[in-house]
Amino acid sequence: MTTQDLVGNYAVEGGNQDGNGISYHGVLTLSLDENNRIVAKWIIGDHIQKGTGFFKDDILVINFNYEGDEGKVYKGVAVYRFINPNTLDGFWSEKHGNPLFLGSEYCVRIPASEFLN
Image (cartoon, rainbow, N blue to C red; front, side, top):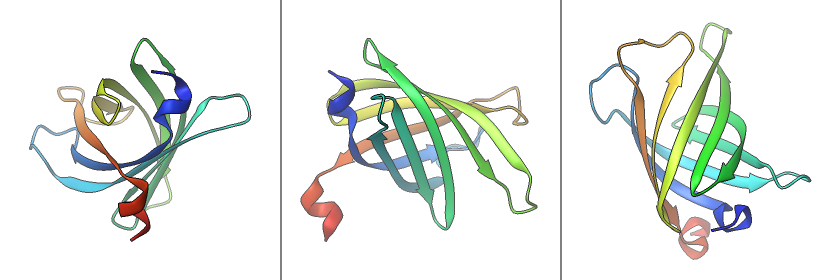
């Protein structure tokens, strides 16, 4: 796979960094900047997270951040392994999250025709 192959929208099912299993669903959009670096945007309900990253040997690493309800900025890193061109399996951690757990995400590509409908 190439970096260009990653571009698209993915349905996300994830678990927070607390060990309680699946706790959210949303959409992850991957695009490229002018230097062919990954630009990521997660939409989980009305919550938006953004990040940038890189891809090598079927591993995608994204440094992300978002603003919490109280106005504080949270930062973390997400790591995904591509199972196939349409499926990512990953984990993530935030700087101030519970150090005993990792968050998890499973992402499946949304075909462009379905995303537009």
